Structures are given as C-alpha cells and as structure tokens.
Length: 415
Image (cartoon, rainbow, N blue to C red; front, top):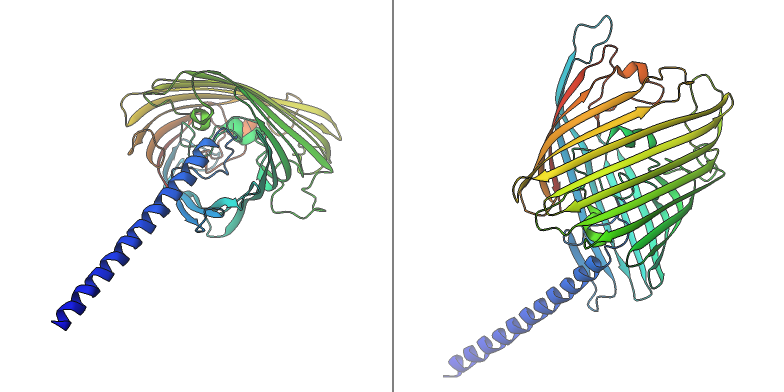
C-alpha cells in the first residue's frame, strides 16, 4: 500500500509539473504572437531590404518580452542559359549553369522598453566569402518618428529602397536599377510615417559606401538622400512591401519621389575624365496594386559633374503582373536606358524586355517561390558600355551584335 501511495503521489506531481510546463509554453507562445503582431503593426515603416518579415523567422525572447531576437534567412538559387551573346572572334555564343545569387542570414529585434531596435545580416557570396550587408540600430523618438544609425539602404527609389529583393515581381530588379541604385551606405536616417504619407531622409557617406573607413576614398565629404511617398486608396502600407498583387488585395496607389546629392566619394567617373566631384540623383514613380494585379512605372536620372564637364543619364521601367490563380501570376517588364550622348565608351540607348511567371507554393506569401523568365536585350551591350555593365545577376554578358536572350529559373526560400 505505501508503494502504491508513493506511486500515486509521484504521478500527481508529474502531472502538475507537466501542466505547469504546458501553461508556461502556452504563455510563451502567446507572448511570441504578441511580439509578432507588434511587428506586423510596424510594417508602415519603409521596408528597404533590411526588415525581417514579421511572419517568418524564429523568435527568442526574455521571460518578460522586453528583449527579443528574430533569426531569419533567405536563399535564391538560379539556373541561367544565355544565347547569342556574341563577341567578334569567338565562336561560342552560348553559356549556361547554376549559381547562388543570394544566401543571407540575419538577426533583428528590440532592446528593452526604451524604443530601441536592431538589425544585422550577412551574405555568403557566390565565391564563398562573407560580407556584411546591414548593421544598424533604431530608436523610436515619438509617434511616427524613427531614427536609424549604422549601415543601411539609402532612401531613394522604389525598386531598391522600397522593395526587398525577395519581393520584386521578376527574378531580380531591372537593368535601370543596376545603373541608378544608390544601394547601401553608413550614416543616420530619420523616418516619419503618417496615415497617408511617409518620408525618410539620410546623412551618409554616399552611394555604395559600405564597410568602409571614414577616410576611405569611397566615403563622400557629405551626402544627403531623401524619399517621400503618398498612399491612396484602401490598400495599407504593408501591401506595398511587395510588387505582387495577390487575389483579395485592396486597391491602392503609391506615389513616390526621391533625391540624392553628394560631394566626392564613390561617384562613377565618365570615360576620358580624370575625376568627378558631385553627384545628383532623382527619381519618381507610381505604383498600383489591386485584387490579383499590380503595375509600376518609374523614372530615374542622374547628373555627374566631372572634370571634363557634366553628363546626365536617364532611364525608366514599366512593369505589370496578373494573378492566374491563388498560386501563380504572369508578368512583363520593359526597361530603357538613355546614356548621355557626350559619353565616351559607348553611349547608345539600351533596353531590356522581360516576360515570366511566378509560382507561390504558399498563397499570398513569397516564402517559397519558383520563378521562370525570359529576358531579351535587343541592342548591343558593348555600344552602351559607358553605363551598362555585364551582370551575372541580370544574365547580361558582353555582346557586340545585339539580340542577346537569357532564360532564368530561380527557386527562392525564406525562413
């Protein structure tokens, strides 16, 4: 009898302990959901490419929920086949193979109750080396106001600052973006978000000045960047985080404009000039999203004051997509570049025509996505070489005859 009593007591204690553990797990799960919902509510912030998606990743939290860490990552793996990339004296005009375009791991979260947050992630490059992509802290100052300092994407255009590479409509951003994008820098940025309007301004080391010392040649004497956006219609800010119009989306329109100025630093020097001292960038765009469709038109330009005079390059991109089911959509994009006529080294106009299809393994989610596209470059790349560089990411190779065609398949995975 005593043994039976002891056994019963042990079972009861174990049951209570198990119930307590389950209750603790339920409390932790509820707290994690509260944290995730809080991040969802913050998606009115400009996304750039730095923000962890609020519904993905693994959350680690202190018992009281005051300190959190979200671990997330992404992978983009491609097969590319390029035809008719002809060079004089070369008989092989076909190239194909596989490549890891992006493999990234990051952390982000909040620190205490004082309104501090953080974000950092690294990229494993195609050659196996590591590079720091973003590393910054944020501080909520007042209702709608946020300060960011560290290394981050500069506020400027919709394709780069406004949209993560996993949320673009095609396999990657356009050839226009590859020319005009400011990309990342080190500095401070102030953002204000209201119901229908948001604006970000940054003081930084200038365009494409990452992982550099303060006295580096890539660091500008000073650089100022700004982007403003207005939202119209019923679509919330978070709907414009992607360029995809899912079935069931609200109708909305997003108007945006950006400007950048810098003195010295990483300014592309025109061929034949010794130096370039000032850089002006400007952009304007309009985007629409609705129930199963999306459209975007964007203009970009830049003026470079060089030792031999000023040059002005222009470009635009238009694109649209239509859902054909809850899991799939089709899209098309046209991009056009106009190098300054006074440029040496190839100043012909250059265009790219892209058509393709996306398959979303999870409806209304970019987490697991298969994309196939065909890109046609009608003009000769070498005749526009003053601003158009070859690019594995754009499946664009050297070409002196025109008519280059690339077929790209990409599998995308996020966690």
